Length: 234
Image 1: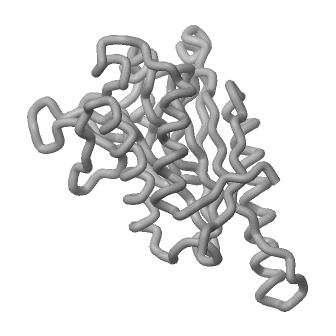
Image 2: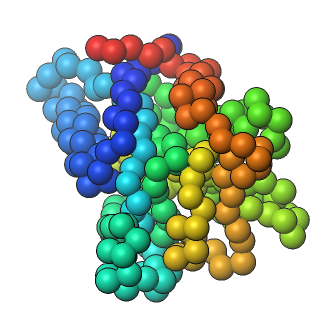
Image 3: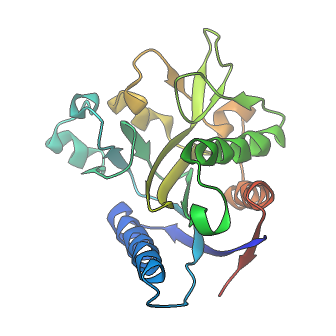
């Protein structure tokens, strides 16, 4: 079955505003699934794929360690960044202009598959295939989520971070894919709680800025193919 997915581009949006919007869509789907189980409605859940960029912000997952944020509140203000402790998995990460953020609000049970491990590997695969179109070999590192370059080597570096939440097989949160990201902002954290590994961006790897819309379209294409999805605006 081909799943319909509502595609939305939120542009540059405050993290809390995007988080609240995700929560609204997420809760609507979870509540609807409960009503469906009780035979109270015949309405179907909806799948959303949200794309955006955020102003400078650090987010800490529910299992994360705040000591991995290496800044005081005063210093956060000085670098025009904010901080949130949130309800996804994973440790601390950074979002900012030039980073492509993707939030799938998917009902895995009704349209896809009931396997969170497979879901996360599928998101990684979409990024790996996107990198391949730029002549870059991305991959995975055992024991860690996200997409890496030169996995297993001394030059190992992360180009895409990931953290998700799910309830009743409905997902939220997603990935942060470094495109033209200001990498200096990673110096203020222990990225994903991993002390001995570095981060990179598509711009840094290619030695030139990359058109964000171009990357977005490539990633959308691979998500659609991997999840057998068709995009719609309704």
